[in-house]
Image (cartoon, rainbow, N blue to C red; front, top):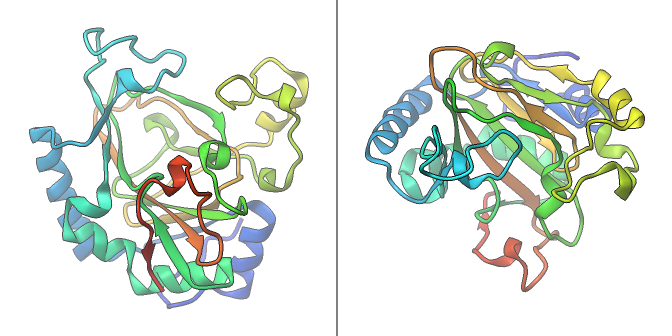
Amino acid sequence: MAMKSAHAASLTPEQIEEFKQNGFVVLPGFAPETLRSTMREVIAQHLQDAVSPLEYEADVGYPGAPSSLDAPGGDTIRRLRGAYRRDAVFRQWATYRPLSAALRQLLEEPVCLSQAHHNCIMTKHPQFGTATDWHRDIRYWSFRKPNLVSVWLALDEERPDNGALKFIPGSHSLHIKPEQLDEMDFLLPDLPENQALFSAGVELTLAPGDVVLFHSGLFHSAGVNRSDQVKTSVVFAYHGHSNQPVPGTRSASTSTIFVA
């Protein structure tokens, strides 16, 4: 999979085709250092002060996660929620013109940011950063069409030893039967047909400033952090202007932001 520079305000035809075929594309060094350094400062302060809204490891309910806030690691912060409203620097990144131009190419229409989904800073702490099994973001999202793009910005190095993202290329186009999924819509680990999918998975290595654009239907996962440093990433979700959330659902519970 090609990893071309993406400082220009638009994607190349090859990058667009890569996204269509694989369900994701990596844009190396895409986020400016000026924004990234400010983000790191804000995140460090918000983690230190436990600025709400927050998600703790005990909140996720994943296999291996702490069972309560009182359990070891239960009060470890997993996500700083509501990133768009936390600080101006996150709004600057969410509406960064080269990013909105790329998203408009992929969605083929004007672009909106969802405040109901992602819209967070992901933190993966050593020792208590729970692994995330194979899932797709669209599982709990309710839009007219299951066609959204998640934007993942690496603020630190992301490697296999600190819980880097894994993707199953092309899985956004697969027909997945209900019996392949558990009650939380994770792929069941013991099914032979799922194991075949897992074997096709690829693990990304990202440098600070690298950005991943991936389709909402793409299966992805992430391991635990076995390093001695916290890993942080900023994640937003975008949809086309015509692809509005279904009224009365969580997806429609907050206002969307018109981006470009």
